[in-house]
Image: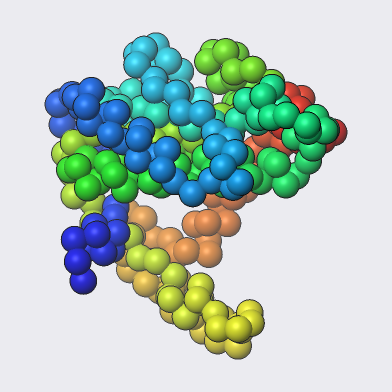
Amino acid sequence: MNETINLLLNHMSIRRYKDKPIDRETVDTIIKCAQMAPTSSHFQAYTIIEVREQSKKNMLSEIAGDQTWVTKAPLVLLFCADLNRGKKYFKETDKEVFSNTESYTVAVVDASLAMQKAYIASESLGLGGVVVGGIRNDVEAISKEFKLPDMVAPLFLLCLGYPDEIPGLKPRLPQEEIHKINFYDDVKQDQLINEFDETVSKYYMERTNGKINDNWTSRCGKALMAKNRDSVGTFFRKIGLLKK
């Protein structure tokens, strides 16, 4: 164990923040750390937009399903997959390549890795935060509001601030379920998932004083059906991020 491992093992989403601003030096450090994330072939196929205007935060919150922490977080960062930059400036390229699934995947992975670096850096500096994917409920509206050019797509927010809550650790799948050796071994999968369902059910019962009685497979299934977001693919094709 060391300080970094301890930080990673005690990660929890923070949605309530103290009324305390984040100074400019701290924000710049967070962005610099994000930029040091691994990036495929040095493409750096992402853009981070710092959302300062309260009206924009309010819009993002509403689109995400009235997630009020978006309006109250001292720092809100919008992470976008960005192939526009490469399409404009990479030399000796077939422009059609930028719309294939591989390029799209690279941009999404690059943005995700950058966000994770920013998140870890923030936590090491005493901040807490939450990733908000609910903005994909209306990617077209966000694209217009933030004047995103073609080939740039909003993916998620990282909301950050000084924690005003300690919600506790949420259980993860058994390590044996997500860590395989040499091949995809699912012999014990039914047992492991059933046991995890029981763990998650107990977690929600205790955390909510019995108000939520749900397990992992049920809760995730309902969440998936509640936000399938078919319009995301349609819009990504419209802006050229994916082939039609």
